[in-house]
Image 1 (spheres, rainbow, N blue to C red):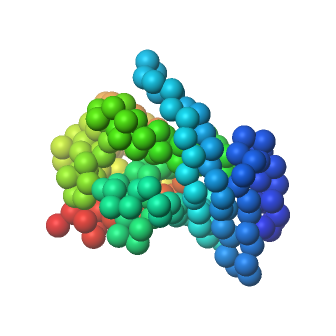
Image 2: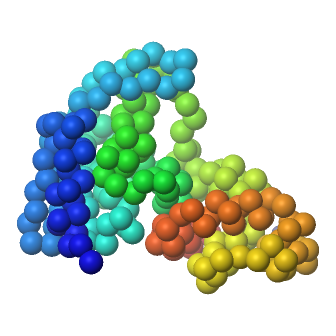
Image 3: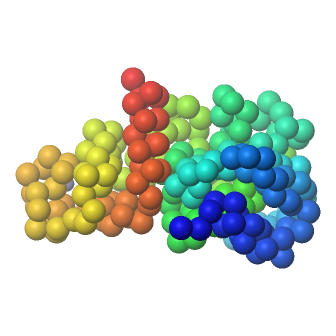
Length: 218
Ligand SMILES: [Zn+2]
């Protein structure tokens, strides 16, 4: 097995091709990618934004099975999309898992999560309108992201589907749907689709999501 530090050093080569002012700091078992993130981005039919932010990406030794905590302390002070620990709220664990499902490397994290976050932030500051819809904060945000992703307003269905995913390595379309409808998965079309999507996300992200469900939906 490749050491996490070796893996990160390798991945930094690709990061530095696009973002040369970011560097990797290794301090015992702490891994931080820090420096200036200079980007130029555009969302479909919207203005191009070029900007730069000083960031720190705190990477745990469980990477890529664990979420990276990203910090920016100058311009996003007081911004609503932040965790209570000060890290940028890049989305719920499941949303993050979906965005990096095809590529869990550092560069994918930066391009698919961090740059869109700053693009949204700058665009909204500049034009006063949102370039794409964001997550409402707190409980409402989490619930509406589930409703969108799972196409159901029933959170206990969400719960059942995610638990099923955690305890099954594969699913059989002829098995009874875990949503409780008494239909087989093949006939519970939407739930079959959800499972297909869930199988693309690492179990650790689903586990983190279930934990946030537990603590935030009361
Ligand atoms: Zn079902």
